[in-house]
Image 1 (spheres, rainbow, N blue to C red):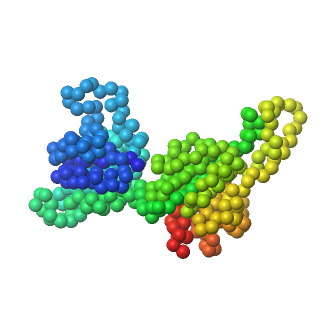
Image 2 (cartoon, one colour):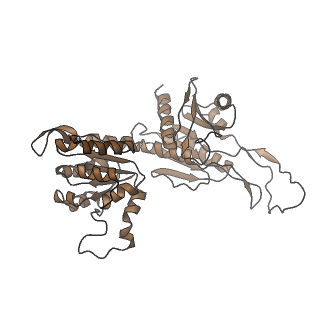
Image 3 (tube, rainbow, N blue to C red):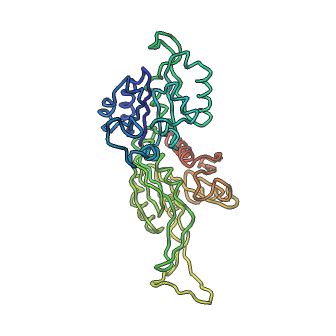
Length: 400
């Protein structure tokens, strides 16, 4: 995963070098961005040596450098789009004021406004600056906007005073980064197989049967499991989604192809999560040539596709098996029935007629139906957060 580390101009800037190393130990790809003031305390060369990357110090290039071109002029947009998180440590009172007021007069403040990634700030300053109402008001604004704040520690400060304002311990900052990104180690050594997306069943060389699944829920599960240390196999029907990093991606098209891909790999999996919206029916006899339009009604004979979840349920051995149920009526009744018939450990059910829970959304509203009889409704959450809740309960199964 890629993060940008913003280093601003305080005495604690030197601690950012150690922070880079600790972030790299979490297998994070770090791009350092420095303000001009930060360069008075530590040189860009230090961070370039640690990261093996150019350190971004200016919006349009340093003085005496070649004239800015289009690529350098929009570099803040490119960085903003490719990072998974922006961390500013240390964050001075000045940088917090810029962020809170939306002032974009250097690369870092412009990057803050341009990114949609989560933002963490770790303030460090004199105790009087920290306690000043202006600083506290700026922090309140940032928190209200969803910015995560790692409060400074108390102790002896570089100015000679004692009190709050010392940059939080490196371990605390890294822990917050891991928590925000969902990086954990509770699935280390586990193999998680996830299916995602729709399948397509040909009617003729031009037309096919499919459904409205975007694959977002399955891809969120794959990414969440990978961030928690699992070896992830993602068997995916056709989608337009980018493949999460560190995931073994197996593209398929039809239900039969998905069945074969899953069965070939299920024996090596500790957990199988069937999040794909598999086509329930296919043409009994696909046409070899395009069916021509006519004035008469067309009757298409359909036959059931293989029930992959049920097959796995009948021979699941010690692996955890999770299925999904997209319903439009009697959700709870249908989910409980599916849980029993398929031999699953969990059914994740949602009413796709609810706003924020249907197809091709970034959020979901689900209820978890567990093999022990519990029913756990979740509020509307991002699909990534839903994925982590599902994984949390899977880990309960592993312990029981």
